[in-house]
Image 1 (cartoon, rainbow, N blue to C red):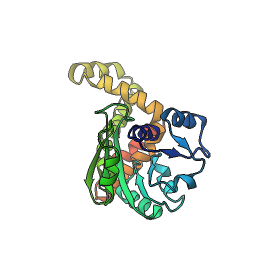
Image 2: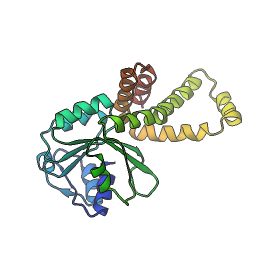
Image 3: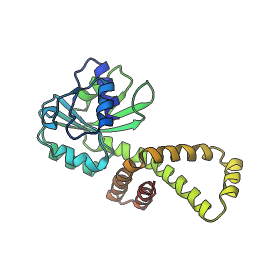
Image 4: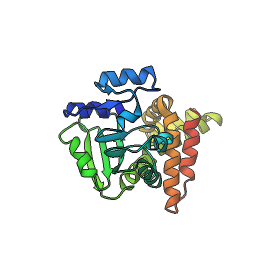
Length: 238
């Protein structure tokens, strides 16, 4: 996702840098393919006018703590509104809350970038006319992350439930009757299960932290977080 967002910014005529220090060969290859300029260390990246943090949820706060940032710091990670406020405090300076919905942006109509905070409009302008649809939610830090948490609570939460349900049927020896009933009354579930399986096998480990962040968001508003704590366990086992 980070490389794809960087490629969009490059297509908009912006200079985009990244830090290869401590990164894998696979990450380096993606950055090269996206045309990103390697400046070596995170300290050099921090000197940029705008910094985008796009990483697994568990690393969001650690990235923000790398040092004070010279310009606008955009946290575009799948974390709770409460967590993003911690990130903003740790990052220092100006900050924007972001939440990405959809696949890595390579064509129009696939990906929305929700933004909130006093500087959200300035960040959205960077993507104006590009394949990445940047939308300002409000000027309140936390609102963009709330959109992301609510959206992924359904998409990934129900994917985890579907995976667990079929495992239950398999364990009880009634998988075939269940599939036959799906075909009769819920014919879309076979394909949804196949998509959920492919996605979970490829990147389910990244969703563990996201489900925990969604659970924390529910609980912060007095709602039950157990649905998504269970979803985290489903993805942890993939």
